[in-house]
Length: 389
Image (cartoon, rainbow, N blue to C red):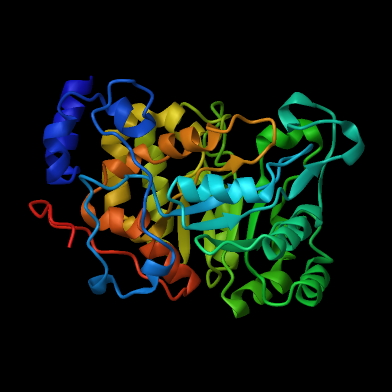
């Protein structure tokens, strides 16, 4: 299949500077990076956080032939695991900075495993309850203050919300306001329905509970706080089984900044028709201008890498509506190079984007606009300009 697809991809959707280098690469390498023969050697991004405060036209242009295809932003990152020890904060900061990440969303694990269970990962512990909690968020807040970084912008996120039982959410937001005034400027990742957690007594949201979100969604809207929802689109038996939940959320709260994690995909949905998937996403993006997607999690790339000819044009067309991320979970038992590997896998699609989409997604323009941050994405150098100036 790959020669025909690659021809279309190279001619229609890949930045001209990459066409020659991509001739020998299968589409799978573009999306997953799983082959060992890639011709592009990735180096760490050397741009500093301070340099991104300059207006775009005053920064050195971004030379895609020489600088990394990995993003400046990781908008979906978990500094603490479901259970057990986390990577120490100073080591975590170094890990992110060494990979060229300058902006990161600190998502707590909104539903952590019972503390006395001895479990580190929910899939290893069926029957152990994963409960909504403020614990991770509070630790993230304390560590961010205790271990500041001059070259890493950390966005703290509230992830405690129990979407099936939202009665006390506003009260807990007020607790955050007292304990961490002005520090939490994102919400999520919040689980609407996560099929993988059902064996851990996860209670999905319902149409009725979604209607009860109005008080806390009003707070988020008033403060301009984005909220990231994990809401499985469906499963292989019924690919759109849970789509009505997301449609109801968007219809009920159209003025909120909503990010749909993983484009609704999951391990349970590995065989969806990509044309059907993209058609659904386009329809929702067109109807709801405040909706964005994140393309985090290596599951997407492992399951759908063969469909680059469909997803890359979609990313290019809707490039102002997409955020990058890894969905890395910082468990202490992971190898030191694991984050770099996951960042590489989830960045290979970025390498195939056109220059405008790369600027919007990888270089942070979407993120800065969504967060109203006083930072600027560098302009991409013209394809025939190797001066990086």
